[in-house]
Image (cartoon, rainbow, N blue to C red; front, side, top):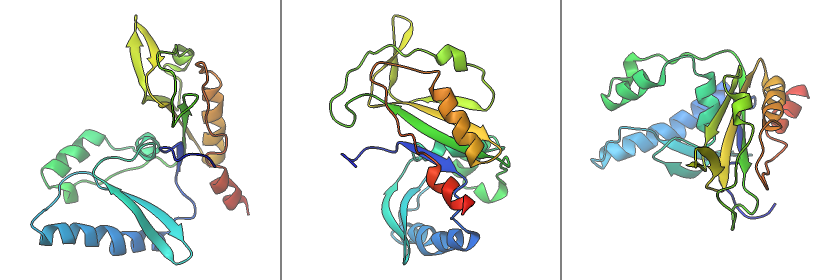
Length: 206
């Protein structure tokens, strides 16, 4: 409900994305896009982010972006066992086929802490407290989105301020960890969704 915003959270893995559905997405959406660009003499090297919606008649494209998704990338990076830099280098040199990506066997949840008023008008320059408490915390990473430094202190400078991301042995534990981490952070007017991952957890328990 309410105005359209950027992504307010993400989780990985997604239990209702089966191997068959993933194959369908690759074969019917991603591969044809790559081939179409090549036919038009516009071969593309880089990141393609496909924003999809899963409907009763299959996956449909909402948008394409030539960048990583936010906050989708945060949960993937947390689960990635491989080093990202060799992957980027192999992509730039068109040797991606030679690289194998390895993943940790765990789950990850990211929740965005946003400024009061987002996506409309919101205040900037509000001090953020609690970051030191999470520094070095196991299985927790705070990705800065709308922040800046003012007099040596981290303050808000955007609508989506922090992407608090955690790992867990499963989605339930990762979700528990992320909200425990968020409770250690604060800035005036901070708000966030409290249901990130709930749909996947409920579906898995049925």
